[in-house]
Amino acid sequence: MKDRLMKYWPFAAAMMLIIADQWLFMGMCKELRNPIGAAIKYAGDAAVILLPYWYLPPRWRWTVIAPVWGLTLLLTCSSWNFRAFYDILSPMALTMTGNVNSTVLPSIISLIRPADFIFIALAAGFTFCIFRYRRSFNAEKMPLKVKIAALPASVALFFLSQAALTWSHRNYFRHDIGIDVTLKEATRLRLSEHIFTHIGDYEANGLLVHSWRAAAEALDYLHIHRELTDGQRREIAGFLSETVVAPDSAATANRNRNVIIVLVESLNSYAIETVIDGHEVTPNLRRLIGEQGSVSALNVVSQVADGTSSDGQLLTNTGLLPLRRGVVGLMVGSSNRFMALPERLQRASSTVVFGENGATWNKIPTFVNWGFTPYTVMDFQQEAADKGIDGALMDFALGLIPELKQPFLLELVTMSSHMPFTLDGLTPPAWLVDADGMESIEHNYLTTIHYFDAQLGRLIDALKEQGIWENTILIVASDHSMTNALPKGHEAIYPADLPMSFIAANTHLTARIGRTVGQVDIFPTILYLTGYYAEGDYNGLGTPIVSDELQSAYTYTRGLIGDDRSPLADRQLRAAEISELIVRGDYFREQSNLE
Image (cartoon, rainbow, N blue to C red; front, side):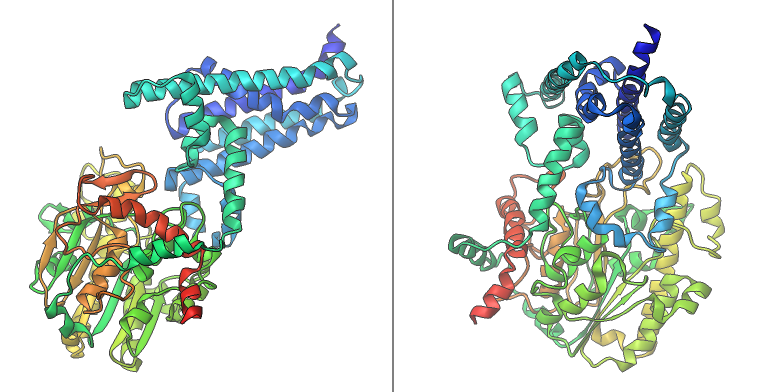
């Protein structure tokens, strides 16, 4: 009897492992739930995944380790992804493998925790037992009645798990949202709602249903281009023709001035406002905010999605929102036609300098397509090793400026405040070293921001010494906010939960905006401040931040943030759909072909 039962133990062990791994993973991401409830919700997926075991020839039963290791690797990598972006990996991640390079690798390493090795240890222990005792389960064939019963039993268990997920989803609406829904309605909602976050969809639908939905969504986006209908073309044209703010006559004086945009990696607004023992973390940024001729907003909602920094660059340079899934830069950045800043500002030269090698997110081809001449850290590699990336970036820019045709557009994309917030050779000031009540990651983050601020101050001083400052608008903007670097005791799940910043100095206009605005509003604000925001031209999908009607921002993860009764709330909701149509229909190329 014992020998007959031995052929079943690999299945039983693999089943328990798959359930336990998912329970532990959700505990790492959110909180540990009732293990019995988790077993019911995850058992159906495990049974279907392991269904081939019942039909394998005895000598191939050892391959049961394959799904165990597959899930182990998926959950381990998803744990790292969740710590960085509060979401699990999606099939679209397969299109982003080129981003894993020497620039990004330290960030990935910094996300690893000892608990992650639990997944590896369990899979390794299971694998050892399979090969150590394989003779115990590969001697007998599987009885025919077991083979016949395996399929209906697995399907029945799968639907039982789906029923448990529906029950859980209904309780979520009842207890967390305060809406009483029927079981039928709860089932429809969890299966039909758009996937705003993969972790939420996985929690609501289980591994297999989520994987099927995510794969279908990924296939849809990989076939990204769609032929626009006449109705969609009219809808886009109507939206783009709306001008919310009248141009300011004072800004027309800026039409022929130089524009320098400093796009700062992970600049949270709270860092600008932080003062430690009387010392400002960002004295230069604070000074810019307080000067006459500065327009600033420290309550800018980060609207990036899968593309993080790439999406931030898209928002700033093109005025478009990112795709709900996928990355514009990777998918169509170098092939679609965009109405980017170089074309709209009509400067004599447009240049971008990256504080990294430009290999991630297809940056170089994308920025070239937008109209920029690119330079990367490879052009000042030794200087970056000697004085830090941002310091070398500023020095390279200062050396480049005399060669640029004026009026110029120069964009500097910083890197020193990228995760994991380390700067080899950097000595933080004593007041920052001795700061109490700070987590190490916050301390490191503020150190990198303080370093960036000092380098920005050097850039400004040099521009003044060279006589360039008076004829230059300086814009400092975050590429996105960073939730991994929060003050102790504060919480933020998505970048949209943590305000980022926008500062424009030397503009001849003065305004300090406290209202909620969006990252998509940066592009039209740049056009407005340079005198190029005008009816009949492409002004982006946002609104200049000087408009009093602008009081909210739309994000895929949080919906509308700010005043949902603001006059522009409906327009902001429509902007997401319009942006999707423009990108997927390559609208601007189509329009240029008609002209």
